[in-house]
Image (cartoon, rainbow over all chains, first blue to last red; front, side, top):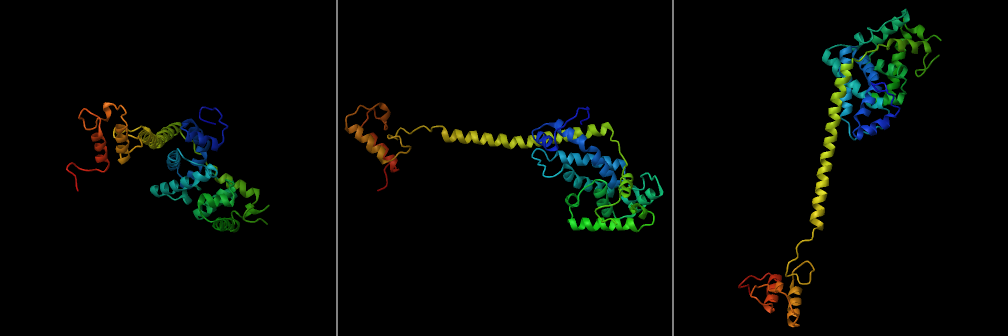
Length: 179
Length: 134
């Protein structure tokens, strides 16, 4: 769907091929297809709305500079994620803010367990929280996470293990593991 | 008991809930990003077009140079692309045979076509200078 409301059923690959041939409307379609995902990821990292919007802009400008000649070898999110991550880290440094305190603590907590989870997530090392959310919120496979974060699959597994261990052991979140 | 790759639905729901902050992107931000992206896209195409134009121009020039016939020297009597002693011999033979030859073969511009014209070609073929070396 593009901004005018007209659906564009073309695949990402077809849209990218069109952009490679100078079709700027195809780029616009890709923008609206991935905009919310990018800004959401950016907010996850930065915990700041304005910084997330800056990251959105930087990410799509970076993407636009790849044309013509861009070749999609994996999912588009796999290509975009490292850019979002790097721009977010830069924005966070620039703003001298810490995602662990900001991003998660701003989120609403509906119950004691939810509140506990928010608190535990806030205190998890950023790299463990990243892997945890990519796996269970974004539904990425271990291999996909390894690819987007650019770490070995073994490191993904170990970060995920320690993140879940922290949640299992915390008195406020351990009930979330009860079937 | 759950492993690291499978967690209870309850935890999944709680994680999704904790991550659901939604940011609305103002239309003016969309417009700014898309306008700047389109500038980049246009610039990218210009960069790719210029080398193609240059390459095409180079090809045209090369083809022109390769396929445009170079004017043949009058002295190249046998039209083999070079002036050598064979041209001198051929012209001498034509003169000796009494063949009527046009003024084009009056290479020394003395108003006649004779063996001196063949000698002009021979001199050119062996690059003898006037008053030549011994």
